[in-house]
Every structure is written in structure tokens, then in C-alpha cells.
Image (cartoon, rainbow, N blue to C red; front, top):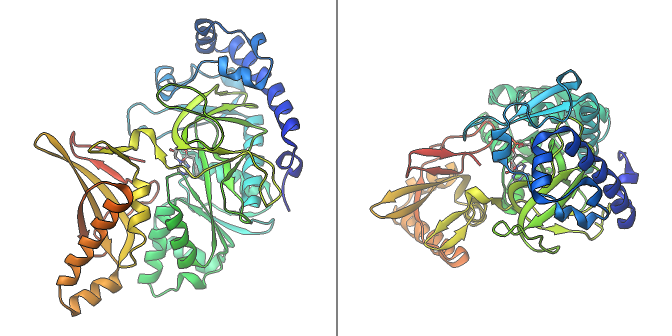
Amino acid sequence: MIFNTEMETLPREKMTELQLARLKETVKRVYERVPFHTKAFNEAGVKPENIQSIEDIQKLPFMKKTDLRENYPFNLFAVEMKEVARIHGSSGTKGKPTVVGYTKKDLENWAEIVARAICCAGGEPGDIFHNAYGYGLFTGGLGLHNGIEHMGAVAVPVSGGNTSRQITLIEDFKPRGIAATPSYVLNIVEEMKKQGIDPRETSVKYGIFGAEPWSEEMRVQLEQELDIKAVDIYGLSEVMGPGVSIECQEAQDGLHIAEDHFYAEIIDPNTGEVLPYGQEGELVFTSLTKEAFPVVRYRTGDIASLNPEPCKCGRTTMRMSRIKGRVDDMLIIRGVNVFPTEIESVLLTFNQLAPHYQVVIERDGALDRFEVHCELTPAYAKELSENDSSALSSLVKEICHHIKNTLGVSVVLRVQPPSSLTRSEGKAIRVVDNRNKSQAAI
Ligand code: DLL
């Protein structure tokens, strides 16, 4: 059963027509109700009536994360507080938290968007669904939760953490679906193996993984380890939360955007110029139906590309590529741009390595030193301890060589014993920047 099939299969012209009508309403709403937008529109010399075609969106000014921080907590809300039904936000590890609000109608729309997303991933009404995204200000837990209930599945609101209890509940409740960050699922898998449980033998058939960048190689690993279909779900609190886009289980080839609610653009992050389909750049979203917290051309900081071609699953909605990384998390290693996911892709081709890693940047005199910390699998560590240790140095050489060949950069590789890197319960910290002793969560 697929929710709102009509919206997912509209011909492109019809979708554009709908988007334009909703865009006009949104633009009018923010211009009339939110002083921040009135000022920004006036400065850009644009009025709501100047939006006559969907391309006219390019006349509108961008919004950035700093605008949310500067208007903390509620100055970007477009409704009075008595109309707000819920608040979410970011954890604020990089400064003040950012706060977003939802009216009852926003929450209903979001529940429907997520219900559609779960169906897209292979979910069916009646499924028991293990939701291991964190509940709280973070949108992952409650966002998924309302969608699970809305589609007629059974929500198990386990949240993140307490991994052995998660395993007991999976064993006892026998869920068909599971949602968590990919890094936390790996953590659950590892714990299952420690307990002598074969992760391939559980009841789980599909996984909805996201909230952090992950690679195609990681998908292969998760699908094999758990014998499931794994799909990528994307979203951000500023735009709504999880469900802005999701892969379909049929094609697993790009994430279908809920285009009736969100308009996507790709821009050159340096110039702000809109880029053609297929070209990689920064993802920008405009909300089309949100009441409490509409966003206009919000710069997500995430790198992706767009594909308007209909999908083999039958949906006609625009697809975005998997997120390569965040603009802020791009590593510039001696002039070469590298994202942690690209390093992940290389590491995961070595079956001697466990799928846990971290990039650590150290100050080395005047230069930056990039270290990649990774771990051996327990099986390979055991094999090594029984054989000669020169095998380890040849493995390190081979991995470094592979990184150099594929990404064009030299890194210092630190291969560590099993279970030595910190495990995540939510979003993994992939980059540790020790130059200023500050940590960046991605
Ligand atoms: O992470 C919402 C979410 C919850 C998405 C559960 C998916 C599942 P925020 O905490 O506001 O919201 O963080 C948003 O996380 O701008 C991306 O940088 C990153 N992100 C989210 N999903 C993906 C994904 C939630 N599938 C930020 N792939 C976004 C890569 C992702 N990065």
C-alpha cells in the first residue's frame, strides 16, 4: 500500500503547477508575517507578486543556518505561539541550538510524508517497527514515530542507546522494519554477534537509515550483515525532519523528494548560482506547505545532485543523490577536497577492517596531518595474532596505496585493535579536529 500515490506520480507539469501555487502562498505568508523575510525580500528588491513562474524563485534571497541562530528562539515563526503544537531543534553542539516549530497541520503533513516514506522503503501497515532514532528535541525519533503510526504500523519507541535492550526487543517483538543511524545499526549488529546472535536470522526485513552521511559500500555491508533491504532517508529539522526524501526499495537509486511539500535546488556553494540537473552542489530547500516555520531557499550545507527522470518504481518525483557530505566537513588535504564518506568507501573494500573509522586532524608544525583511524575485524585480528605480524604492515601499505590511488591524497593510517574506536548511539563523529581541540559532529 502506498500513501498518496497521486502526489508521487504526478506528471512534471502538474507538479510544477502545484509547486508554483504553493510557493506563491508561502512567499506571501512569510513576507507578511515574518520581519526577517520582509527585510530580506526588500533588500533583494523582490515582492511576493514578482513570483509568477517557478524559475522566479531564483529572485528570492537565501536563508542560512546563521539566520536561525540570529533569530533564536522564535523570531522566524510565522504563527503566534498559541498555534504552535510542537518544537524541535538541533543539539547545538556547534553553538546555540536552532529551534523550529510546527502547527497541528504541519505535524499532520509530516506524519503523512513519513508514512509515505516508510511505504516507499518497503513498509506495510501492520508491520512492527523498531525506531532507534533518538526521541527528544532531535526530529528523528518523534518524526519517524508519527509516520509509523499514521501508516498503520506498530511503533516501538525504543530511542537510541542501551544496545543490549534493543537486541532483546528485536528478538522478542520481531519487528519487520528498523530505523536508526547507519553507524548505530552497526553497533547493534556488533553487539548481536558478541551475544552469539546471528543478525541475519532476525525478523527484520528492511532498514531506514540516515541522519548522517553513509556510502554505498556501507549499504552493501549493512544489507549483508542483516540480510535486509537498506534505504537512505534524508531530512533536516530546519526543513521538517526525516522524510524530506527517501530511496525506494525497488531501485535504491536516488532519494525521492516529497516534492509536493519541498522544492529543491542545487547551487554552486561559492557563487549561489543555480546548477543544472545532474551537477553536484549545495542542496537548497523551500518549504511549500509549512505554516509555523516556513523556509525560503534554505541552504542546507549538504552536497548532492538532482535527477528529474521518472524512476523504475513508478514514482515521478525528483530524486536527489545520496549526500556526499556537508560543505563544512569537506577536508582539504594538501589542496585536494575529500569527504569522509569517500574515505569510508575505500576502507570498506577491505574485509580485514571493521566498518568503524574516524578522521583525525592534527597540527604538525605549520602543516595539518590527516590521520585515518580504523579497526581490524575480530576475525582478522585473531588470524594475525596466530601468524606473522608483517602481514599487518603490508595491509596498512595496501590501504594507504588504495586511498592515494582513488582519492589522490596521502594519509597516516592507524589500524587499531577491534572495539577500540568510540561507538555512536546517534550521529557518528567522523571528523575529530584536534587543531583547535574542537570536535565536529557530522
Ligand atoms: O538528522 C533528520 C533525520 C532524522 C534525517 C532521521 C534522517 C533520519 P538534523 O539533526 O537537523 O535532522 O540534521 C540534519 O543531517 O543537513 C545532513 O547534513 C545530515 N543528514 C540527514 N540525513 C542524511 C542522510 C536530521 N540520509 C543534517 N545522508 C542534514 C547524509 C544526512 N546526511
